[in-house]
Image (cartoon, rainbow, N blue to C red):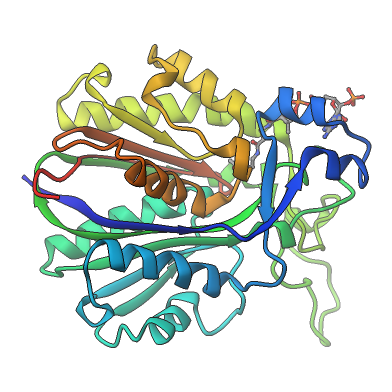
Length: 333
Ligand code: ACO
């Protein structure tokens, strides 16, 4: 059947490194607490590099490794929840910076499932005749962190990951969805809920929650944990069933880098060894829509992918939203 192949990958991590001990100066925490509860040792922070800039750096690397000129791109799909502007979109800005004059541009707001959603959307465009699509996830998440909330601010990092996708032959399946009813488990407001004519309070229950009128991320960590450790295994089983393979045939299961305990619980639930997954949250924390792209680039550079291997990607996050795709590493890469 028609599938996808990743012909090039790239990533960008900003140079500022924040260790766990740096957070102990800001909130009541310790390096040991953060490490044992999350697996995170340090994360990268943009010192002002915009979201589009990190994406551009990752995209240029991906294009170079795919030996692709920006003019050859038919589309750019940009996953972010921390874009620099309400308008124009990040994909429009990136298209201009890259000089990708033939590419259509789409931004998607799919939180930590963003890159996987972008890949599945790209697949649909490839099916309809497009040849080369750039997908990119880029996040400035540390600007949305609430530095008075010790349970959430310690989790996040900034960065970008990108892939060039083309059509290929092989297996492909996907499973995507959301649990919008549980959206208040993690959210951040974009604009204050007011205008000069407003006399009534907001209709949305989000605004009555603590921090509901702030732009910071507010999170119920326990709820996220419970949901994530259930939805990841369900999604993996779903894509395997659709592709007609057993989960034990997956060579690499690349998961959104939320928290080491979520990753370990999901692998255990699936009865798969940790050696079948890849983790870098120790170095980068949770970079939301960028995390799977950064993993793919590191794994590609480390030569971990072999022709014909079955790769499963699963993202999950605010929404609550989830996405899984299963495909083979290109035989002609
Ligand atoms: N340092 C020290 N103590 C802390 C910290 C901290 N950084 N954060 C919370 N605590 C305290 C709490 O205040 C609480 O103290 P109390 O018992 O006196 O009230 C105690 O630790 C236990 O709190 P819990 O919330 O039960 O801590 P838990 O063990 O559940 O760990 C955590 C919190 C790490 C956030 C956990 O709930 C978790 O991993 N949830 C998943 C959240 C996640 O990964 N979100 C990522 C963003 S969403 C996404 O990407 C899908």
